[in-house]
Length: 108
Image (cartoon, rainbow, N blue to C red; front, side, top):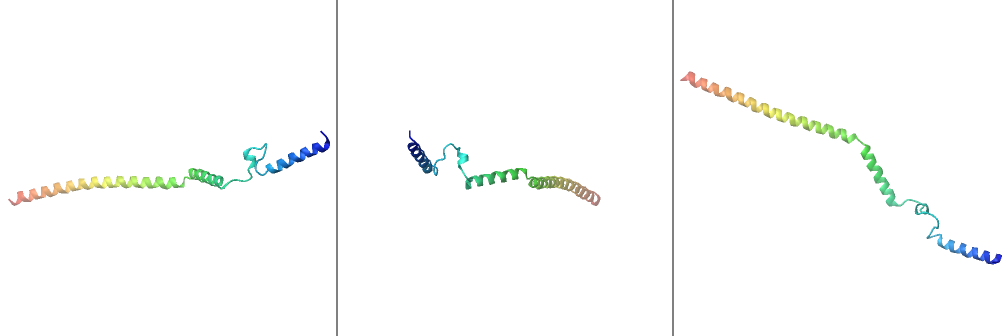
């Protein structure tokens, strides 16, 4: 092969590689051939970042615990007042019955 043929061969290979460079990058991985990130990747990364921040954030848990505690105290108070009211009602009913019986016995 002469020097002229070798140069011509090199130029043909260079021309072919130049044409292919826009669409195919030889000897590179897919990750290396990409220049920037896509909008989808940015969206997914933002979603993952927000999910991690949400899992680390415990300020809402404190508020929820206080709300559950207040609800439990209110439930216990309602049950206690209801039972006390029934007991007091029974006491006053007994007193009223005895006063009525005493009034009837004394007036008769």
